[in-house]
Length: 100
Image (cartoon, rainbow, N blue to C red; front, side):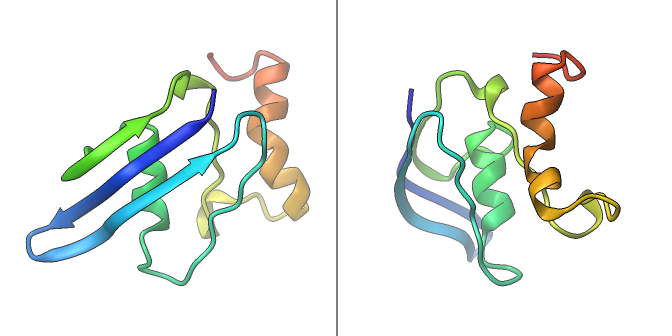
C-alpha cells in the first residue's frame, strides 16, 4: 500500500515545521527526502511513522512497522557506503535482525 500524506501541517507554537504537505510515496519504492537543515525532513518522517502527531491533515500509512528510514549525520555508519547505509534497514529486516 502507498503511504499518503494529505494536507499535513505541524506547528510548534507559531512556527511551522510542515505546512500543507500532500504527497504519495509509492508502495515498494525507495524514496529519498532531501532538503536543507530545518526544512522539516525529520518531522515529515516522524509524522509518517506516528512519532509526531500532525497539527492538521491525515496520514494514511498501513504497515508503519515495515517503513525504515536512515537519518543523516550521526545516524550513518562511516565505514559503509551511502548505498549500504540506505539499504541497511531492509537488509536487517530480511535477516530478522530488526523486530518486525
